[in-house]
Length: 179
Image (cartoon, rainbow, N blue to C red; front, top):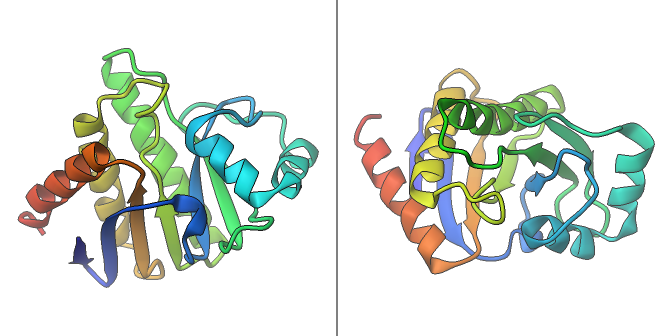
């Protein structure tokens, strides 16, 4: 599914984020930037050891709701933006932190002249964030940012399974009516 959002394109697709040809990909990282399972593990396996070496050399961790940038190693993407989403507790703070993680990635795109990024669904795996709620937060955060940032031409959400894809597709259909 593809929507024009202001001067940018917002896409929702099902697939493998490690195979994306965008300039950057987002990673659902942990606060220690220590690698892990799920999308984080897949990105580190596909990107090779250069990503972890750069993380260890440059950063001592990353607070929840923020993100850091590294090169893409062996990935097609030139950069990886390692975003730390919240572990779901049901509080409003979770929504604020999740939104902040996406926004920080977009701010890093602006700072580094990155015009295209592919995101996974941050915090919806082992961190337990309900996909329907997380998809609304993620998409609204991106749409709000794109309003004032035409330098980002493409934001693509790459969802691994059909349940997550459907949740993002439905959320985008609803949000697109408000544009």
